[in-house]
Length: 308
Ligand code: TMP
Ligand code: MG
Image (cartoon, rainbow, N blue to C red; front, side):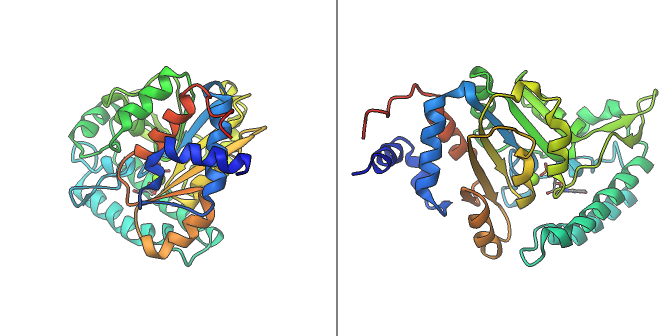
């Protein structure tokens, strides 16, 4: 038996969750080798970069779609019925394009800019009040994935930075994790933040627009500020879109990257694309069980090195 085979056998036994039929891997050996390397260098060398909507939040619950941060704003406290209708129409037009496996990223890009720009313009016209955001989040059926508490708490306990990189709305995202009691000090967020005037009314969105397929630019622009991430050479990346794969592009000197893709929708159409792009693909898995099992393994004291 080779050293690598020996290690991999050991890891398969240590993370039995990876054998579930909803877990797909193109190169199982590479995944196990990466986890092994991450375990050897420990939590002090790890950083986690995750998308938010439909990655940390559920895709569906009890047969109904769970709202994204944009859709949480669909509350009469914040926007009127006419605006709801317009935003829904845009979602029905552009979301199928976002997940269309037949279109390239280059083809999708201008259409995503169009979608986000139209929605943000509609939101600005509604004069949304900052002081009502928390209530709208409380009243929404927004839901983090099962296992979220362990995920956030474990990373905080181990002082592992968690960068949430979202094309959603930062103010809403913050409120969701705050209300779920997991907005720990190790959490950094890159997202679209609302700009309120002195009376607390939405007047614009801050900075460069982030949509699903320009996260690379966002990553590079923000990398310099996130100094606490420097020197952490192992990256665990979670996403639900191919665009999420570029979220780690701002990290320098990466030694090991493990990418996990949640395949929530259009499963058969996108399976191959996801398998060719993410190291691990989770098919219709509404939980954080697999990331939690991998983290648990990385966080234990290295003890496989002599078992070859
Ligand atoms: P994410 O980067 O956190 O996943 O957030 C982006 C998601 O938000 C993306 O999958 C599309 C979704 N979205 C809506 O649900 N409604 C909208 O109006 C817009 C512009 C995006
Ligand atoms: Mg997402």
